Length: 106
Length: 390
Image (cartoon, rainbow over all chains, first blue to last red; front, side):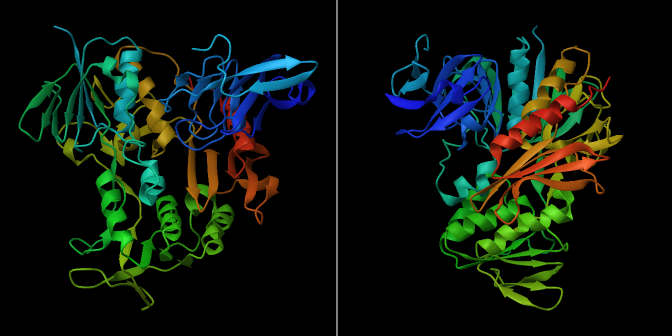
């Protein structure tokens, strides 16, 4: 389990990149937290730098879209989904469990 | 009999058109014609990762796992040679013809060559996969590279060649590189990356000719200077592939002329991507855009029109990027000569900045270097600020 930050440091609409074996991007969508691989599967770009639109993040470089809940591609040019990671929020802190697929993700 | 759409051109714009047809529930036959033998691939990496050898052909494929479901009738390695407007048939180089109810023209553009360089070994352009493979092989045994043209392709090739250990000189005819897309002030800032990374940049210098018999040995400049070269890359722009349409009756200019929705002068024929010059409401003229995102997004509108849809053209803000010397350059918007560039974040000296171009105090374009997060916000802001043309 990786400690990300206090929930207050990641307000709605914001994202943070955390270092792990593979970097992970954690998003706050209206109070719900999601974690996916930070690196776009199309070309090297940080999805934490992307644009959050509902439950989708748009890659800052070529505008590929990924569904934060499933990691699936919701808009080209990316072809390969990103991995999701389980997020735990406890006592005002956000944690990520790398390698454990988020609940409900395919 | 089910209807047929012929898509002429199997790169990003053509493939995007085919996907858009299926997305929009077209269940007829789609014939995808491409003059290259290769399955569709992504061109931007050709001057970067693919040229450096860090990306494979598989990495740059544009194919997706669900492409089988598109049920495309592929005609790769086949060049379209004529369009018959009456029967709406595309004639192919192998003598066959494809009769279609709708035609999407997506033949792209080709690299402009330096006059008199034909047949001289060691002289390259970079547009296709075959170009990139040939250049990569040649660079592997070369020591000195001269790049003619300091545009984005030239700068990216120079950058990649530096990582491969070559001595690189870039020659640019204009006094400032990239002044067209970025303005002289910011063009000069971006061009400083060359010196930062040991590339020699010569500006305001024309090329008189190439020296060598059989294989290039040097580039001679208009001031008489001779630059020794093992390899020369010519990056001086692109020409739309429209000659094959000369007798078709399709209105041509600097590209296939279309309205804002991609419709040509002939009913049932639309044009997309680098070969098309679409009417721009804001510029009040036909504009041919060679940007990657344009080739990705524009076909959806053209195809919808082909299938009978009407309505407003979706708002879009031109966007392009360039990766050079480890720096990520991104630009969005429409810049004019007298717009004022203002640094709103970072500094040019740090090679990390965001510049907003303003017209009468209103932001119209944005340029970022190594500022992807902030850039994306500005890009979105510009998109929401663009009025929808009626």
